[in-house]
Image (cartoon, rainbow, N blue to C red):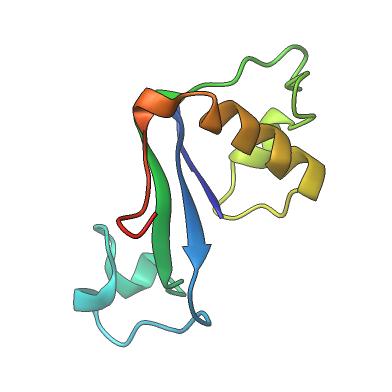
Length: 105
């Protein structure tokens, strides 16, 4: 899972470590809005987190290096192709000073 922060850029690569589930109370949701706003929780482990967000440039709504379209970043979760994900990861990994590995790596 790649994490994009709106108007900022890509900030992390995560691993999904369990099935999604419905939160039972507001105490379980990570941000304001409570269970009215968050319908499912996705358990993740952060694999890499950048210290500087990675912004992509878009020409006519498309990033030339990855093929990613800007509209794909406007919703909560978007399924992208393996090729797009590999392209984004290559860009993230080109920033070794801004990437923190998992403790066991």
